[in-house]
Length: 432
Image (cartoon, rainbow, N blue to C red; front, top):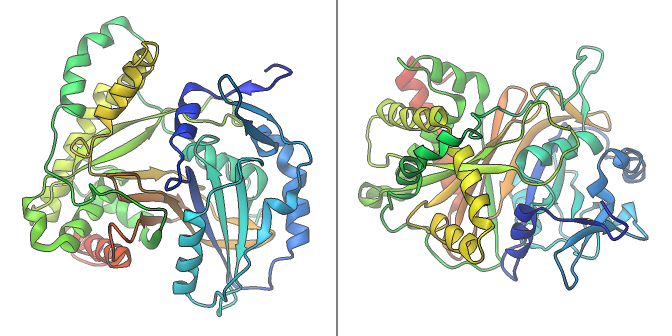
């Protein structure tokens, strides 16, 4: 840190540079609060303002100058610009809420201010309210974004029964290190596995506009765990989630799916449990996973996906790719070339992320969070994005598209819900 501010990391600066007239660069977390009296906006602002000291980025903005972008103090910071009630049309139904969140996903954050907002939406007809939290990806990745919200907004629900904090309840996974010199010997094998198997032309390989359409689905965490435990070689929660999404995509795409070889890029957080809990910014990599469309047996699809992710994790592909891209970033021109190859729609068709959220129920201003969802924006030539997040005993799944490129996203969300039921029946013989 200097008197002139702190330079953005190379990862954060690259993500900031991706923002355009059609890309906003932010992620959104949607919290559905239990029915009750409408939230007191001024009291919420005061509470959030009191907690901002734990998150330096909360009161910093990005300054663009002759050199690299920097984080600098936002003079005249006003909490009212960041915690506000969503103005505009009436929001009484889930469809109204989808419309409001879709509009927020398409609106850019103000670069003259810190890159986050909390928008209160509702009350809905049933007395529930929603908070849509937007945070720029240059400020946080998935893990860091949840830490940010836990620091400034979320509390443990019914603290008398729970001693843990939301942050303690959602540790980041630990992945194999690739610091050893002989790890680089495996590099050709990793590149061949992750980047050397281009698939068919993707139905999501389309240019996008600034328009957004979102939809949401829910799956029980215990159900995902039970399905995974039922397999001869244990499948992870994320494996089961990928299999359910693949089944939903298969049904949603119809007969066209049988001719597609779609791969999902799965972001992998490289944050560690013992790092500074206030650490923000991006520290993630990825693995690419064949979604096995056209496979009629949902359990065979799950087993194939699980075998692939197991091999990639055991080999430390994500960590080695992270090191590779950072090494290439030191060579002029190579960073852009490497990312152009890795981001090709033939290398992966869509991104499917899964972020661990609080393992215990959380609340905002004493109101329990009934549902938690995540939404991440699509990209050019990757016009569908799927983002999942866990909370207590559920996983909320968010779907985001440009409706001019990929319409009917709500039908996809419904198809994924049905595919989860089919997977559960195949594994255990029931829908529970």
